[in-house]
Structures are given as C-alpha cells and as structure tokens.
Length: 401
Image (cartoon, rainbow, N blue to C red):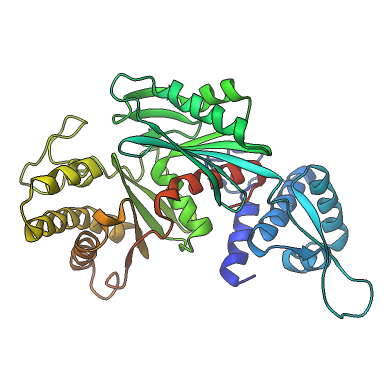
C-alpha cells in the first residue's frame, strides 16, 4: 500500500469512531468526525478495525490474513476474528491458496466478495434524462438505464422510486444499498432542500426510497457524488474541486480529504453565483447572470446553436470558460486547492472551454502559488455520478471509500 493510500485507509477507518460525548458530523459518501472527547469503547475499536480491514482489501485486493495483519498493524488474532466475522456476513470470501514455491503450507487468500453484492445508483443531473445503474463493489457499471426526465410538474419522486425498484429487482445479487446523486442542495439526511431544476423543495427523497424498497439509501448532491468518485476511483488528491455541469452547475469539494458541506449544506453551490457585470440570461432561480445560466448544458447548447461559424462557436465556449474561471479563482485562493476537475459533456467542456477556464483561473490567483493548479476533464465520463453514488453506499455500509 502506498503512503497516500495508507493515509486514506487510516483516515477513513478512524472516522468511523464515534465521539460518545459530542455528536459526529457525517457526510453521505465519506465520513468525518468530531474531536474525540471521551474514552473509546471496545465496540468502537472493533468498528474501526473492521473498516480498516475492508478498506485495505478494497484498495489492495486479495491477500493472506498474515498480509492483512502486516498492512493494518492489527494482530493476527484480531485479523483472523474479523475476517471470520466478515465471511459470515457475506462481505469477504476466501479466494484459494497463493501460487508460488514458498516453503510451508500455502497461504489462503481473502478478498472482498466483489461479485456477491450489487449497488443501485441513480444520477438525477442529466439535462434530459435520469440515469440509473447496477454497479459492482469496484464501481463497474453492469447495467445502465435512462428514463426521460418527467419535466416541469412531473412526479420526480415516483419516477426515481420506479427506476430504483426496477434496478433492485434486476440486480441478481444481494443489494448493498441505493445511492442517489441529485442536483440542488441536499442535507445529510437525504432531504433535497431545494432543486429548482427538478421542482423539489424539502423533499425527503431518501425516506421515500427507503419506504418503497426497504433497503439502505444514501442521497447527496450530484457534485458531491462526483468528487467522491474522483477520490475513490479517479486518483484525485485531498484538496480538490469537481465542477459538475449538466442540467445545472454545482461543485463538490474536499479539503484535507474531508468533504465540505457548509452550515446550510450549500458548500460548492456555485451555479447561482453572478459572474460578470454585464447582466446576462435569466436563471431558473429568478436572478440574471448566474453561472448556471451561462454554462449549463442547455444554456451552452442554445448559445452554440445561435452562433454562426466555427469562430463564433469557439467564442461562445471561450466566454463560458472565462466566466467559470472568474468564479473559481476566489475559491481556489481561499481553500488552496491543488486540482479542479470538470465533469460533463466532453464535446462542450473540453478544448476552448477548459483551456480558457484554466488560463483565467491562473491569471486571477497568486502567481507562484496557484499557477501550477491542475484543471482537467474527468476520465470517468458519464458514469461519474453513478460511481460516486456507489462510493456513498460503500462508505455508509462498509466504511470503505
């Protein structure tokens, strides 16, 4: 295990330890904890150790119990007990003996039961459709299904429940849980506080899904899901921002490897920041000139359709990229981020858009400090929110991220 991976393993496992005298703050997808102020009880230590074993197997793959003991710094007796418990719970499986010519009895390898469970994930951020998927524990999408957005006045909750129920029935294996990435502002209980593009206000989406499916459910913002996917599967560092551009615009933030939510669960809500002093198009929130009104997929597509000629279209993309860079500069400066990742249609966000956004960001932040910030497109394509929703379930159910 590399040093960064080891830090992630320990940080994630330690974050599962509750603080008995003070409430912990949990974030769907990744967990954070308050400062420890009371004695750690044996049951809490076992939860810590269980998560550490699962996290190590998740990232490093099959290994012997002795290997697990060395990697986790847990005693062999503790590891053997935990592995037996996890095999009994169906989360770990023996994978046969290690091939080789070492003297003595060959070691039995154990690993996560990666094929014995499935995760149902749903992405509500698409411009015209909701996307659902059945995923493995490794984040591979084995089934994908799109359903048309119900539109203004449509029953969004019923549409999501029906999609989740259909996918859960088709999973074929034990469903570990359901994860949903939604546009708008979502609290830590899975209530969509406001999502103008979906017409939702104070909607307990997680509660509706739990009642309908009788499964564990985690709901978070789509941009938060995207940053979880980049952290778990995309090699992102501990100080990163993912800008998710689809029907709306939002961002997910990690600082020091911990998610940032904010007091009102609106951290990263950049879509309704006004960019520029030249007015601009009317936004769905009622203001003019919001970033979302300039660079969301529907807005960009409409402006490009009105542009005549390649240079005019490139100018539209450069203008949109500049406005994003203007919005990002103070955030990067305040949080000292090392990377910004763009998630959305590559044909719109790659090229002139991304190049201009990066150049604008660098010219508006401190030279010599932030000029090396990396701005890139995600390599996870359209599956980024689905995979992030799977990470949310893995973290909530197994302590793995």
